[in-house]
Amino acid sequence: MVFQKSLTRELTLTALGVFVVLLAIIVSTQAINMLGRAAEGQIANEAITALIGFWTLGFFPVLMILTVFVSVLVVLTRAWRDHEMVVWLSAGLSLRDWIWPIMRFTLPLATLVAGVTLFVGPWADQRSQDYAEIIKRREEISAISPGVFKESSSSTKVYFIESYSGLSGAAANIFMQDMTDGKVSTIFAKRGYITTRKDGERVLVLEDGKRYVGDPGKADYQIGEFKRYTASIGESQSSTGPAGNRQSIPTRMLLGSGNPDYKAELAWRLSMPLSCIVLALLALPLSYYNPRSGHTYNLLFALLAFFVYQNGLTVARNWISQGKTGFWSIALVHALMLLLTMALLKHRNRPQIPFSQSLAQMFGKN
View 1 (cartoon, rainbow, N blue to C red):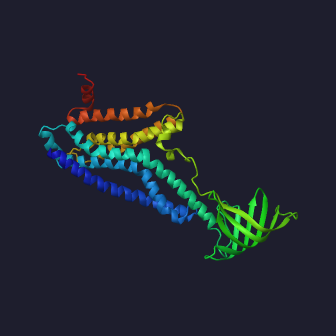
View 2: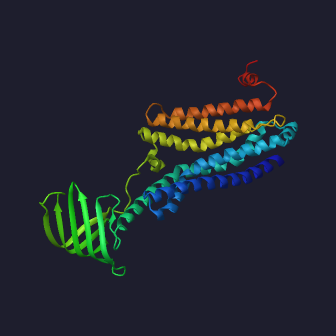
View 3: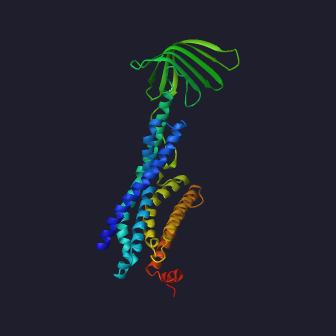
């Protein structure tokens, strides 16, 4: 029908604009946060762009859900405000006839949300952790700078190199102090270079030097000479192994697990596409706008409903994680919101009838 095609086209164009605006706001906010952390030395400068990209992929489902909700709400509110909805209702269409056109717009995006939430999101989170760990190790290696005393990220080692040859990768006149287990180990070497072991561990190889080991403030230092001495300056750069948090765990590992945290994460991931569909349906009755009143209170109610819905899902996820409830708690939140949507839709079909009477008719009471 004509109204279905026009609605789908308008929803698509509006969603594109809303998504771009929300993405720009969120990315700029995260970029400021990342730059602040980089200024404090928590992350490396060269890691900012990659970490923002991984973070955006992980946040994409929530961003898309919000885009769908806002787009449907804005487009239908405009239709009410411009009396276009009144024309369609006068032509014999009810609000229920708008459900399928909205679903034509929502279902592909909900499928996209499901794919990102179940597969892309965990991968992006794990890659973000791996990349941050690799950059951290590179920062440890970059602590060796000619002519500058620099402290390692673990605050247990201090390095100083008088000169460094970029062609051969060798350094001359090296000083290193290691403070581990309450003892101070001071090393002087004439030459040294950085190499990588088979397991990916980066080590500093020192040649022709002396090593002083002892307790600070005491004179019982042990002095030894060496021809070759190896000092670790970074752990293996291979994968760190299992995911560090439940957001990084692949979905296949969550299935059938008895771990409450895994159940909560699986329930949350399955809830993302469902909440996208439910919010799109909820936007239909919440978009009602009375042109005579001149107030857009419906937008405030819609914003309140969105936060109540999301907070309800978060609380249910936390209860599942704590072992207080099962999967049914998060399904109950969806069911309650869907029931509210049906009640509002029943009422908005005949807005002149009081809401209590609409509820009575919905449940078959006279």
